[in-house]
Image (cartoon, rainbow, N blue to C red):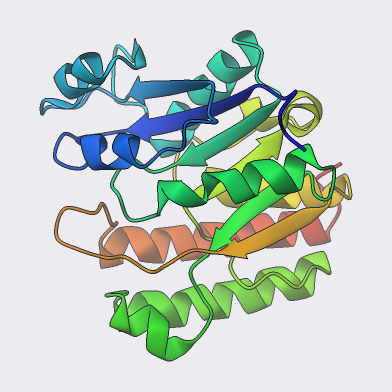
Length: 237
């Protein structure tokens, strides 16, 4: 289904030196290219990436999670990607599942694929997801589903894939440079009625995995509600 498609994995990286090699080692061989965009890390992320032979783009200054993804997608399109898989290089998500993302998009079943960590409260918490993150994830996802008309189990995953058409037709360049970038991507996909699918991924929180603190989480939550209201009132076309 995906054999004739060029699959590129993009890694938006910031201080990922301790988890990058584990992430890359688990990326399936069917991936054609791996692009790492470093957001001015102050650890050995770039050195590890060079040792692993990745294509590396170093941003001149730290621009934020959304700004990093903008560079990721621009490079992936420039490199001829048909399917672009974005995964956080903190090993919180299992790269071995990339093949399913590629199959669903390559087989023309979906235009966007999400890796959902939410199958049960017990499993999410047992995997290390903090209780306040689980509660906020559930509350925001319910709100986003009500506003968009979709019925996704999670809107806030750091593992997702897009077809080339989606990245060419959605105005992601105008998205936020912060964490709410991902929310804007999904609402813009919903506005264009793209097919959004999901596949389960294990919950894997641990010390080295990146995670925003409570204060940033609160800001992210408020920004998410703002984006949802903008969608509801027709600001996304």
